[in-house]
Amino acid sequence: MDPLIKRLAAQGVHSVLAQFCDIHGMARGKLAPLAALPDLVAQGAGFSGPSIWGTGLPRRGSRSEYFGRVQPDTLRVLPFMPGVVHAVCNGFAGGLPLDTCSRQLLAAQLRALAQRGWTLQVGIEPEFFLLSRDAGGAWRPHDAVDTLDKPSYDLGAIRRNLGFLEDMRVALLALGFELQQMDHEDANGQYEINYRHDEAMAAADRFMLFKLAGQATAERHGMVFSCMPKPWAHAPGSGLHFHLSITDRQGRALFADDRGLLGLSPIGSQFAAGLLHHADALAALCAPTVNSYKRLAVTRSVSGTTWAPVWKAIGDNNRTCLLRTVAGRLEWRLPDPSCNIYAAVAATLAAGLSGVDQRLAAMAPCEEDLYERHQSGREMPSRLPRDLCSALDALQADSALRQRVGDSFCSEFLAIKRAEWEAYAQQVHAWEWERYGTWC
Image (cartoon, rainbow, N blue to C red; front, side):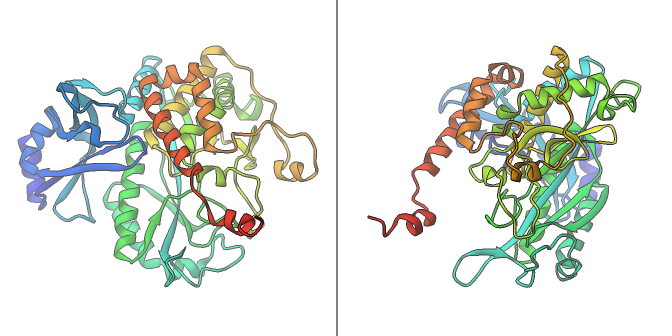
């Protein structure tokens, strides 16, 4: 550890940002002196357990303290926080791994996968908005000229916001990201930055780092970096699609088979069937906010296009389905960027493997545009839950998935999210005043 500390000190590092993830998927942590790194690895940075969303820890006793143990392989010098090295933590309490820690949740799923000799690769596609408030306090796209009805790939917006994008490029490259592309998405103020896939845990850690970089960079440019799934009813929302593939010890792709239906092997088809079988319960963990279901709705968009995966179906390069097959891998289109990335990946993996273990039969491929089919009035595949309450009910009812994911975590998640739904349900919104205010 001493050579590492000396090397970091030579780079000007004086502090460690020990960061963990709460149950909502938000980065939390504290700064500690670089000299404390050995203790941070061995014992962990200490936090008051009840002060953190979703730990389930008591206010007294040996298990009231949450310890975030630094994982040395995650150390990254932060280009946007001079003198600080970022370190990802696993949650412990009473000297034991904390079963309500979402990173521990994913680690447990990956250990079970490794026992099969398999490795999960995940490509994550982050979409986000760059926002600010107008003089009246209302949220709007930061770029006031970003007003096209169909703004996908708008080069004018990219040119005007190149300062933010260039700073993000520099920061992400410094953090070890392999960038692939940046583009303006289908809503005003919406962007996507793509980078190379990775092993599942590394991919989840990388997404948390991506958000930290986005927030810091946006602040420097007088913007707000927003992962809100659906800021405006009239425009498309943001997704966080997972591109999933599993390799064996020899590095062979287990999902791909050119001779199989949709280019999938039996294992790939069974994994897909597991995702669709547990989709309603997965919605709670992959789309975990009230606002998520404004995105997962059959609504018109000013751009003329919506990418929301509303129906439980699978199709070859079919973006109107919940599950899209492409080049022998699965694109799981349910998650949005408000999710806890560790819990969403863990639950996705658990659901897919349940399909493999039960040898679930593949669903017939969908070969049509489901939005056009819906407009024609024909019978549709079954829909995802229409709101957070229904998704939570589905997770509560899916005991098999909860047990595979982790009952302690799911119980905490359900309690917190039900309280969130109740708080929302008790609010009186502007729409209600407009519709009902003069009726009585």
